[in-house]
Image (tube, rainbow, N blue to C red):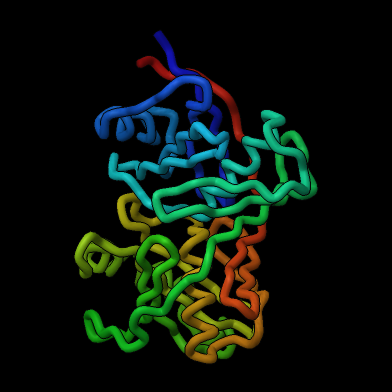
Length: 271
């Protein structure tokens, strides 16, 4: 027996997507770890399971590559939006509700193509929980985006003022420790304001480690930067290793994440 999947990536944040709309589907942590292994499996930051409830509302369940479950994933949600458009379950331009463990979220697929689409994810209203959190002698802002984030800012006015790769070095050296600094774990971001409407960001993700990009991390960083006055009015462009995404917080505090999502390939894995 084999299990079919489709691989998607948004800003090189990559996922194995499984369709459980017509039949229930579940995996053990060991199976997830094996599937996501980059040398012996299909390779991914995590898996996405797409299903639909009795009322016909779509649902996204997320598992990190260490087998743990996540409540929310911004780039994963955008990948799900592309899949729903690819499979003709939604039409481009439609605003589609997707249930998550963090509550209902929304996706809209624009400029749809077979390989890449522009997908906007509605992520709800992020909340700043603490703007004076000190860990390892560094100041962080604690933000809830449906999943927990802490963000540290290097207050530079231009990237040339930084040693190359400063925030990547910080994420790799401090991320493994700080991931466990709060009860239940936390995603750790290191951000550099590079202009009035731009941030450079690296995130160490809880349960996945360093990833090329993090959608909720970008949203948390923009929320924190607006709160502290590091950037002007949104939309704010967030640059990550995997690419660029635009984050907007409207006057009511509702956040959207706007960027490309790509279909990579389809395959099968043994049960």
